[in-house]
Image (cartoon, rainbow, N blue to C red; front, side, top):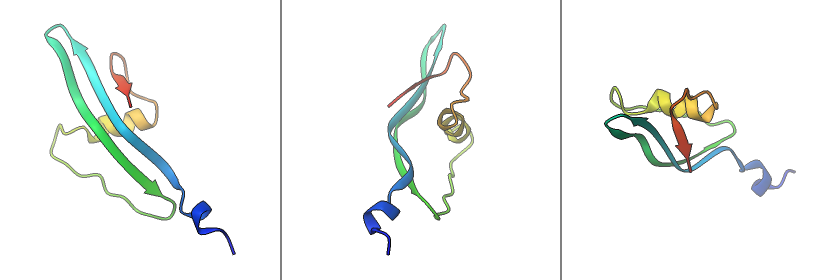
Length: 73
C-alpha cells in the first residue's frame, strides 16, 4: 500500500501569487496574494466576476503571461 503522505501531495501549489501590470498611470494589481492547493484526482472550478483575474491566473500558472505582466509569490 502506498504511503498516504506521498499520495496526498498536491500537484499544484500557489502561495501568495500576485500579478501586476505596470501602466503609465501606475501599477494595476490583477491578482493579489492568491494561495491554493490542487490535489491529484480532484476537480477544481475557478469562478469569479468578469475581470477578477481567472484567465490571468491561469496564464501565469502556465507561464504564458504576456509582457508587461509581472508575477510574484
